[in-house]
Image (cartoon, rainbow, N blue to C red; front, top):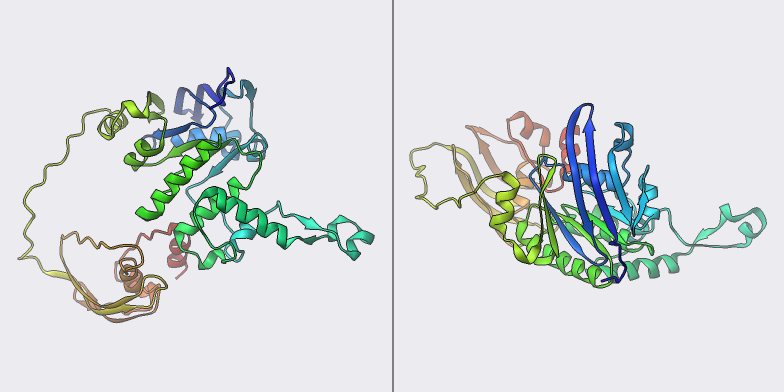
Length: 371
């Protein structure tokens, strides 16, 4: 922790409206050096808009700007672009990945900041003809990955990576910036397995120990209590609570988020679907999905039934829906609503009124849309 009088970040009376629709009203909070702040709230509470203001996103300026003041180390700042925020030592990892699929982790981590070295041609014709210093790039990316505390293959191409490793690559890119003071993590564990999420929480603890402040946004409230020093809860564009994490609980945070007591749902007797017809039948399904191979799976799903598929990462639970939807080579037989679903053809699956929400919403969603 710092001994300075001023905290690292102060947000004072922040207001924002979009064309007359007020989305943020008098937001106030502070964040000290090396502190981890958990920012909570339901969807639409204003969390992402507030972070866009802090990070200088173009949409804020283009929609009329904002009211209030942002202070860094006691000095008022105004970020008109993300480059201004980056220069001030603020980094942000967004919900959607911003990686180049055909580049390696190292190339993405150091994108637009690659170290170069001179050669005979550049000595004559100028620095524009310098070549990349791959040895130094490897050193810097390895240092960022080590600082993150989670092992990923720096040479692996992004398109070949599991979703969790893509998230860690995004974080390593921010940690590779020497001037980083504050890192905003927007739902970073949403695409991670439990083991990966715990590794990320340990990484956040390491960042805080090195003096890097973190704003951590997540709907997994137990993670907030596990890693954060303080909790700020938003509802309908207002800050409704700003409390030390050790003085609150998941139940309290949930109540503040929704504005009422939320009673734990009592576990009742399971509904009987014995009389319901089988709406989908999966027989002897195999799926050749890297890391999620499926072999000889048979399932029946009745009309109106909710079927949960559990298992550790890599044991095939993701392969079943990906195979049924034709995203990876599959075999066996799948029938839905009385008709057989052709495998290995996403378009025919969609035409049969099947829908799929993948863990990788951007890439798989676009793939299904194009099909």
